[in-house]
Length: 117
Length: 422
Image 1: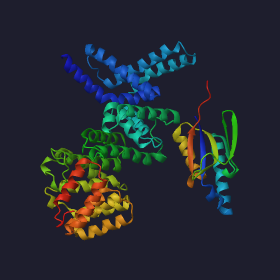
Image 2: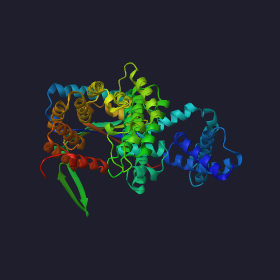
Image 3: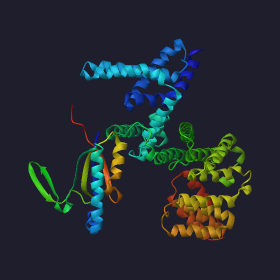
């Protein structure tokens, strides 16, 4: 099964980190990503620019509206994701728990619908 | 054998085997709903065939085999409308089905039942789903019975079960016992569900009933099952002991009018001696496992000291205070602090206990907890401060939801001699 692991964190806290904290977290992410690539579990993964750069788009009655920022204000914001292949939810949870961001933010584990046969 | 006797014997076999049959069918068929349907068909087939041929030597294996065959028949019927891939599925299902009888020993059944328990109590499901699934799928209670126990409509409970099974399927929750790395954590999750079922039965949180014996009985059955299926585990033994020792006192806990009878006022001759004897042996076993000190075992040891006292005056309160102090180190919580304070009042008097409770209240964690106010009321009453005691009892009364507890608090308030009328 494929799972999307959505990495949420508090952007304000992230922005306030020291240079050495940023460097060590980047190193941890590199190690983690290499690990799941080697294990054949990695499908895709990216870090996202902050929500201050986000635009929300809606189409209502044929009218498009693009507005600044994310849809809802929350304490934690989506900051990145991995798409992984895992045997089942337990394996996906174990992988999610190894994401460096899980130590301060949270990871939402979402199963992906398989493509229609 | 006349028909009604045969029916009753069948019902008993079904009730006893329902959980085991379902647990193995889920593994073989890979899906809760197909397994339930297959089990239903197997029971129907058994009613017909066993009446003529008698109950087979291994009814569980017979029922699984029959359920499995019915499921294969159903796939075969559906195949007309589907692709050739299913031919291969049927072939492999039939090959597996042939292999079923040899592998159907007690170990297989046990492994499948553990898979079922861990799946029903998976942390990715919510607390309501844990309890509903465990009672329905592991214990084999009807949806109606589970709904009644939790004071919701049958329809609400049925929806809850459907949602939970959909989550298991959609999220890919495995039908497996957990990996060693998370095994202990997951066991504690399972035990929390079992204890939740027990406490819901023992101290129903709302409404007019005080005790639901059926829920207590199911929780104890689950505890025994876990003890039987898992390697020796202090937490499992401790929880089973704790439940038995509490349940032993159940007959003395409620008056014929449905009123609460507190431990100190209970008729100790009504306590169930068989459960006490079993519980005491289990406590000793739980406490003697080196390197494993479980909070459940410590709570059971406290319950053991209560039931060992023939008269309330014989209760070993200093040792109970000591055990609560151990428990506060292992698993600190406001409820444990409150119980510790009550035990301290029996050893050092109400003044010290009141200090402990006031310090707990000052930290603001439990101001909505009615038993805290009830305990304060009792200490104040013992210290000869009836006006303050009445205030405390009134606060407790505002927060208590269970009718028998409310009656007890009202009786306490009426029993105070306050000198004035308010």
